[in-house]
Each structure stands twice: as structure tokens, then as C-alpha cells.
Length: 317
Ligand code: COA
Image (cartoon, rainbow, N blue to C red; front, side, top):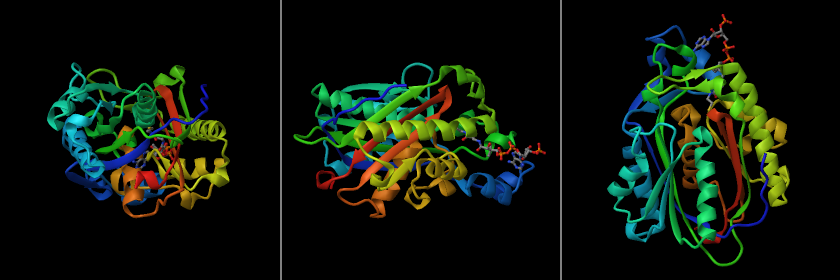
């Protein structure tokens, strides 16, 4: 386990999101397989999910919105980091297509840390700001529907397609990444995987149990690194996998569950896109105010987990 302390200078200046064009409701799934709206809603909190599009296409849509909000010219971006576990091609990395379609003139790379990928990428981006880059576009984008077995009721109910993006920019003075933590327990590969050309295989109960432990441990490490306690956290932006995983983690952390931002009822699990989509929602509905402290925390196949404590300030607005 790694713990890092110390601020990293930088601020989030733009954000965007995109969802797959087609809506699949729980009733749609119940008409195809032995399940029901009530079961899915009670066991996961998901009502519907959006599918379709390509990983690059969704990333471009989210990235374009983030660039416009930040008032950034595409040519000013120094680096594109695309978190995805569902690339469009085996080779090359999907980030290259996104870089081309957005008109960026910079380096581009994919990061695959499954559902923890956005937080891994955000921390990586802050690291590059320390190395001298000024503006970085970070996107989480996924088309999980392409890797879902639509006959398997234990996984088909969970996943959706979407993308979320942020622009981070270097700034003088106090930084806005106050603490972070990245982990991987590689021995747990078999509880959640898809072979090349295959679909997602998952030991649901085991993933659930590990997810709660991993999220809680990572969140505690980030808060320790930031010198903060649960009572300092304004909002938790968790990975959107299952509302019961979010609520169990909040209980273990001692943070009221109404502090957790949740969008999964209408998105399902969008893997690395789920945290930036939830962040987008909370920023757009005006919930997040200057001075708020956000705890972003995710877990996923690998089994990875990651968290970041971000201070929101006037500089972000
Ligand atoms: N509809 C109806 N019944 C279902 C069902 C469905 N979609 N899926 C499973 N069941 C049945 C099972 O067959 C089982 O029946 P049985 O008792 O007759 O054997 C029963 O419901 C309980 O199954 P179980 O797997 O124990 O349910 P659960 O409460 O653990 O919920 C998950 C299943 C998948 C929703 C839950 O384990 C989960 O969310 N795990 C984490 C998954 C995750 O987050 N993955 C992504 C990580 S990034």
C-alpha cells in the first residue's frame, strides 16, 4: 500500500460528460432474462443504464465540453490521459484517436486501472503539472456493453457506457490535491476479469466484500495523507458500482450517506467514467461550493483501488 503526502499545485478548471445514446431499463432486461426491476433496484440501486457509442467517441464528447468550460484552446493542452479498460482497439491506444479528433497537439496515453482508472489518471496528471506541464486533459471513457454477456443476469444488470472529463491547470501557491492513495492487489485477478475477446466474469459477492474494504482503506489513507478526518469531508465522489457498496463504505468511514454523490440509478456502472460523471453532476447542480473538500474514491478489477482528496476553491470557479 502506498501513502503519499504533500500538496500538488493545480486546479480543475473544466468538466464534461457523455452517456451512451440508448437507454436500457430494468424492465427491458427483465423481458430478456430471469430478473425483475424490483430485484435489480433493491440489490444494486440501478434503474437504467445507457449504452452505445465508442470509447473514443464518448471521450471526445466529454473532453470537448471540458475544454470549452475551461476556455482552453485544444492546442494549449500539454497532455491527454485517457483512463479506459475498454479500448476501441487492441493497438493503438484509444487516446490517440481522441487526441486527433479533439485537435490536440500533445502526447496521449491510455491508463488501464479498471474502475480506479480516473483517480489513477488524476493523480498522474497532477504529477505532470509538477514536472512543468500547464494544462492537462483527463478523461475516463468506457463502452462496457461490448464486454458484457447479455445472457448473464449477474453482470448484465450492472454496466453502462459513458465518459467523464476534467481539465487540470497548473497554478501558483497552495495546491488543490491534498492527499492521494493508489493500490493494487494483483492476486485478486480471478474475481473480476475478461479474457482477450471475452466478456466480463465476476464473483459478485467476493467483489462486493473486497470493494467495501478497499474503498474504506484507500479513503482513510488519503485523508491521513491530507491531514484530514472524515468530519472534514464535504462530499464523497465514489465509484458508482452498487448503492449498497457506497452505503457500506460510508458507514465504515463514519461519513453520513447523504454526503455521497450518487448517479448510478440512471447510469449503472461506467467503470473509469463513473467518478468524473458523478463529479460533473454534483458540480452542475451547484452542490459543491468554494472551500468544500471532496474525497474521490474508487475500486475495480485488478483489484485496484484509489482515492484523492481535492480541495475545491474559488480558483476552480
Ligand atoms: N435477478 C434476479 N436474481 C438474481 C440476479 C438477477 N439479476 N442475479 C443473481 N440472482 C440470484 C442468484 O442466482 C441467487 O439466487 P439463489 O439464492 O437461488 O442462488 C440470488 O439472486 C442471490 O445472488 P447473489 O449473487 O448472492 O446476490 P447479491 O446480493 O450478492 O447481488 C450483485 C449480486 C452482483 C448485485 C452484488 O454481488 C454486487 O453488486 N457485487 C459487486 C459487483 C460489482 O460491483 N462489480 C463491479 C466492480 S467494479
